[in-house]
Amino acid sequence: MIKETAVIMRIEKDSLWVAGVQGSTCGACSARAGCGQRLLAAITARAPMVRVLLDGRDSANYQIGDEIEISIPEDVVVKGSLFIYFCPLLGLLLAAGLAESLFGREALTVAAGFVGFIGGGLLVRAVSVMAGNKRHLQPSIVTTISVARAV
Image (cartoon, rainbow, N blue to C red):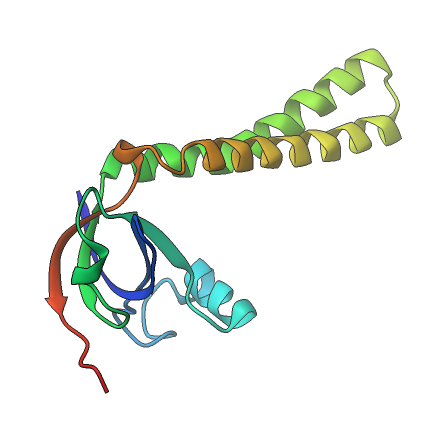
């Protein structure tokens, strides 16, 4: 299990939306040049949020600003990463290869590769939506670290 500290950003009846707590100042770690988190934060100007199912817990026990510790199964992270990266790439290669063998024209091969890449991305999105409520694929709450004080 991979454990991460997160802050509750939004509360729903059956789930919490949390944002990861940044462990170090952006730019200080060794992965600075290839950091997707840094790039996403620069584009959207906000931290990405993750949905955490409550698994029967009462949402009234949580409030916005609480820090909680969540855990994510390691195999879900590895398999999900492989699927996200390889599905569009595989779609590109298969579509381009098929177009090249059928038509043999460069323009059609490039266009088919682009369509295959987009198709692979749409497949990733569809699988992601279908897996949205599967409990074994979701992060789970380990413990509450600190409670936000009402102002």
